[in-house]
Length: 456
Ligand code: FCB
Image 1 (cartoon, helix red, strand yellow):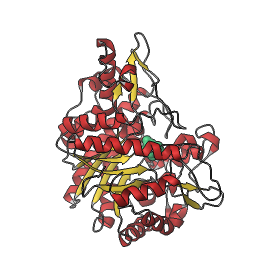
Image 2 (cartoon, helix red, strand yellow; image 1 turned 30 degrees about the vertical axis):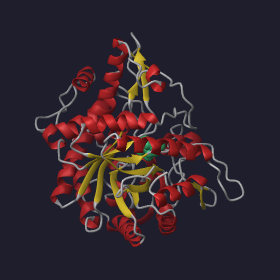
Image 3 (cartoon, helix red, strand yellow; image 1 turned 180 degrees about the vertical axis):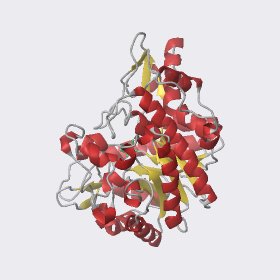
Image 4 (cartoon, protein in one colour; image 1 turned 135 degrees about the vertical axis):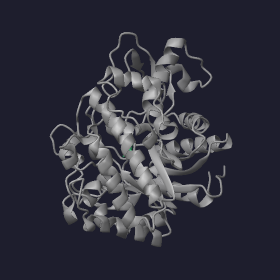
């Protein structure tokens, strides 16, 4: 099973999850510092204060990436390192870190994929309303421009936002993520302002000469329970309508504005019921519809729903009245997420059909399992099987005509898994949080061989 010649293989991480060094070189506070230091928010009271200490160990980490033969490394820039207050003065010492990282990657022959926003909003901006405030979108564009001005001579691949659905609906809807707000109207506003920030930033990046611009979304096929194991199952009308509505909230809410300059009717209806649509101003959709080159897909599991007459909306899903979120009949990872590899090919084939104007890239895919470090090895057979199963589906999607450019595994390292803290290990490289030593798991060695063979 061989992949296309220029297929890009790599791994992904995010700033707050790995860097540590939260008070160094003038870094300002982010909403994740505040949130993780507030008791009760993160399992075990974990914070990103030290994380993987990547800030100090990035050279060793790049050396490791090279040994694993990665061609691409997707990382994110911490906005509060670059602009401690989220606006105004640029902190050159913060940018200097990413400058060194980019040089180290290029020297190792690894292409940097820079994500500008992976959830660590400067706290100073949250204090002024965060993503519920329209001004944050403009601040984001300024920040994006500043990062590009420093790294754009060497970085080709830019992503504006990581998973705006999660940032808006877990951050402002159910409050499981920073800033921990729980208001459906705020979540709808945040989603729109994130999109506006994406459009403004994409335009600035393009004007500055960025070659490849991408929006990264968490997407998934929305299936009824019967469809999980039987793609040909035909759902009844009520179940199909429930699935369509959730698909609009999860995927089309972001990709329709970004790629067609319009909101799905289901999303406008959800906004109407939750604070109204007054925050969507004339001209916004045109800005959001900035030309981009790629959509990054983060896929972990399908979303499974059925009709649930009379049920209230889930806090993470404003507009999901009368829908039941159902379990899938499938094995699960340590996160409790169902393992449905062919959900990925179903998703990719559909997205490439619905959004033919962009290429697709898997910007995250992977799994947490309860790994054991045993005599210097981690025999993570379940992760190898998860990755192998999903890569076969990626290949299948390509054969079916999906324009898929690459695959980045989540994650290079075990790291701070947001509200789950350090207890959930997603890395292909094991991190011992006491000594901070790194040990490639069996999955890393397997992935290295897949890359070498450009296939399975
Ligand atoms: C995604 C996030 C990423 C990581 C994985 C497991 O939603 O983008 O940071 O936490 O989930």
